[in-house]
Every structure is written in structure tokens, then in C-alpha cells.
Length: 209
Length: 419
Image (cartoon, rainbow over all chains, first blue to last red; front, side):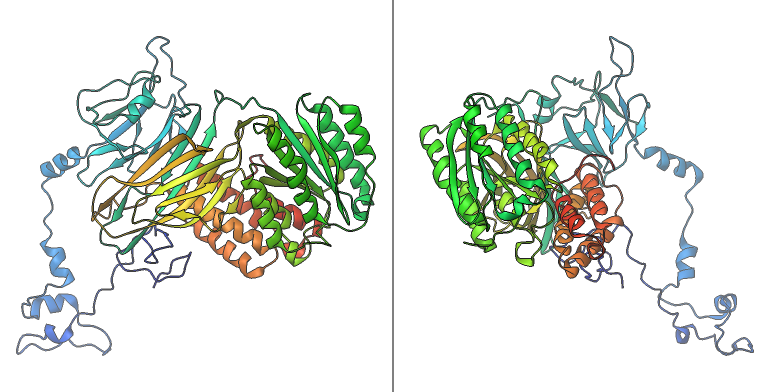
């Protein structure tokens, strides 16, 4: 059983956060998969008249191919049955599904007047992205806005991208961009009930595809 | 409200599990003056509390302390005030508050300081507070008072209990004074009881403990103190935290300018108020804390409101919110840096205690091991983990007395300089 490296509390299966309420350690790896139960060999009795295959070693399990052929149908599917029921997506559907995943990008702006990369020091996870073109955003990325504020980019369970401001105001990415510049950024961040927007011009641009 | 003071609140997660009995939330509060921040244009009073016990004769310590005091007087603007209290077997106010333009008189008083015998440090601090500082506060309430204790040893007579010193230092701080302590050489803080005395006195006094491994460093330390204090933005500020009614504040650490665990959190209902150090123009302040939130429902609940108070006036405030959810993805930690900053402070304090206590050192090392398993630590968290790693590399059992004191001092602040 995995233990919390901070407080030694045993990890609860399926939980990332340590169950000790004051600890707060969050395991980065998923919990170990539950062990597959041993097959119920009795339930896999051969059809009447069929004999177990011969084996020189009594510890060796019956050959799986042989069992598939001779075992009675059962209510509980075995691992092999589950695997067998998986239907592969048609190629076209798979393509469409993949296309439906919205990807979000961030790019440091280009000043319209000077036509050169801005020096806004926009950072993603601490890395300055000036002059690096479009960078794909990932869930949980922290964006530092021109040293003015730090916001967190999040993709919710519906795949919708949004920005979490320090006061938890959420900004959704939709259509009709709203330009926001350096001077009004603080005001913008403090405002509520925002329209769909795109931060652009001298700051940076967040777009989706 | 001041618009020249940046107050920033970061939280490690924005959602907690509605069904979990208790969920931890970690919060980081940063206060950073910027280039536009206005400095308080008021006079300063420097009260020097100088140890003149017999040991100050060794290693030229007394002469260096005098040189540091004289250099300070020569640097001060004419209207700033200076007073001096010395302590050995007795404490004495040898210079009542004088304006710095009376330099000749002040310097001759400093040069006339004689060496005595024992170390009645408590009486020295107490006298400085009750006489020269009290007098200045009565006559000129706007003056910023700084008490600067210079010593090379532990108290030997009079009150020697750490608890008495802590009480006195808090009284000094509550009186609006900052108490800085400069320790010289490697003789102080060596017995178990006084191992952290100067640090505790300075922390409770709203100042910082500085260590001069040799007496020649005292002048530089005092000059640095002077430069910092001239840039005072807010004197004697308080940080007031208003918590969500159901939240519990479990633990809190100061990260900048000095590292310490905030003890005995004073709480009135859901409001917690703590003393901050004076806010100085070129000095960021940061604290980290852990809150426990019980199970519940609702979105955008007011988790924490932080306000900086100057006297009774609120000069800056910021709020953060929390939402309940059953979506485990939403409840995941979004800012690992905040969590790491909290635990690296806890680890640093353990490592500090671990210099004299092997069990505490083990706990500090365990925290560092756990933090090293985490990815994606940025911001203050990255800085504090780096600091914890640095101080954890030394084994207190194998280093000299002098290096031990230096290591202890290194655990009190984050050194931004590269090695």
C-alpha cells in the first residue's frame, strides 16, 4: 500500500489527495490498479464429456484457447470477453472525435505600431514566451500577465477553456474577441460579467482551434 | 486605500470536494511595494543598545561596535535622533536622544564607553524602551523608532529566561518599535536555552537577527539596516485575515523578509490579526498558511480576505474565493508552488530546530524528500524549495561552532544571491 511521503498515512484507492485532512499532499501518480481476481476455475468447468487437457504440470492453468472452446457461457464476463466486446471506432468517427478536441494557444502579442515582438514578459509556467509563436496551453498552466497578475488556465470537464482570476472570476473563451491592452488590463481583470473576449494587441493572444 | 502597494493572494486550489469531511487549502500572500511606492517622510530615532561586557574586549568587538555606531551617526540626516544604552552588570542610558547634528558630542560619548563585566541584556532592552524611546514617543509621536541591539553573548545575570525576553520584545513591538539584533562572533547562542535567543528577540520585536561572524562586519550590517529603514513605507503594519466562517486556520509561516512560524495566532471570531514587519520599499513580504474547509456546498464562497492595516486604517485588501464541487478534476491542485512554499517553510523551521535536535532534522529532511517528488513547482515555491535544499545539505554534527551559527542564520531568510 502506498503511503503519503509527508505524513505516512496510507493512500486511499482512487484518491489523489492524502486522506489526512491537514496534510494536503497530492499524489501525482494514479492509484495502482486493483488486482484482477483470479479466474474462478470452478465456474469454468468443461462442458460435460470434455476432459481437461493433458498436462505434465498440475500447477499450469488450463490453456485459454481450450477454455474458450469448452467452457459454459457465464453471466460475468472475463477479461477476455470485455476485450472482445470493444468495437473499434470507424476511421471517420475517430477523425471527427479527434477534431472535436479544442486546443488552446497563447502567443505573446506583436505591437501594431512597432511591428516587432512585444516585451511584455508574458510567461507560461514561468517561461517567457515572447517571440516563440503560438504555444499550446495545457490545463493548469499559470500565465503571468506582463508582471501585472498571475492567472490560471483551466480546461473544465466539458473541455471548455477558461481563465481563473485570483478572485475566481472565470473568463470563458468564445467568439468575438475583446481587445485588452496593458493600460486597462488591471481594470479588465478586476471586472466581472465579462463578455467573450480575446486578449490581444500589446499583451498576448489566446486563441482556440 | 493605497494604490502603490501590491497585495497578491494565491491559492493552491479553487475547488474542494463537497463530500470530503475536511479539505486543506493552502494560501500565499505577497506584499510588494513597487517603484511608485511612497516612502514615509518622517524622522527616525535610532536607539543603540550596546553590550559592553568583558567578552566584548576579545577580537576587537567593542572597537568595531563603536566604529559601527560612529559611522551610523555620521550617515544619519541631521534631524534624526540617536540615543545609546549600554549594558554589562548594569544597564545605563549613556546618551539621551540627541539630534544627529550634535555629532561631536555623540561620538565622544560613544568613544567613552567602558568595558564592564557580566551581561544583563534584559535590563538593557528594557531600559532602552522605557527611557529614551518612551521619551521620544511622548514628544514626537510621528518619529519611527528602531532599537538596535549589538551583543556577543548570552544573558548571564538579571532575567535570563527566553520567555521573559520574548514577552519584552513583544511589548517593544506593540509599542510601535522595531527591534533588530546583531550577534557578533561564535560565543552567543551556544547553550541550549539561548540557542535561538537573538532570533526570537528580533522576530518578536518586529526586526531581524543579523549575524556578524567577525566584528569587522558590524559596520556593514548597521549601514544596511540604516539604508533599509530609511525606506519605510508603513510603520508597524498589521495583516488582518477574515476567514470563511467555517474555515479553520491551521498553521502559518512568514516567508519574507524572514522565515518563521507564526505562533499563537490571535483569533477573534473569524478574524485573525498578525503583526507584520515594517513595510520597506525594497523588501517584499510573504506569508503562507493552511486552511481547513469542512464539507459543504456552494460556489464562489469568500474563502479569505486579507487587509493591510496602518493603525486603524485599511491601506490595501484582496479576497479569494472557494467553490465546492463533486468533480474530482476540478478539485485538483492548480498551483503546486503555493503548497510547496508552505511545506518548504515548515521544513526550513524543522531544519533550524534540527541544528540542535536530530529528530527535528529528520522531519525536515522528510519534508524535503516529499517535495522533491513533486513536479511543476514555480514562483515562491520554487525559491523556497531551493532554499530548503541548500540548508539541508549541511550536517550540524560535523561543522564548527561558528558554521553552526551561520547555518542557523541562513535558515532565517531566503538569500537571493547565487552561490
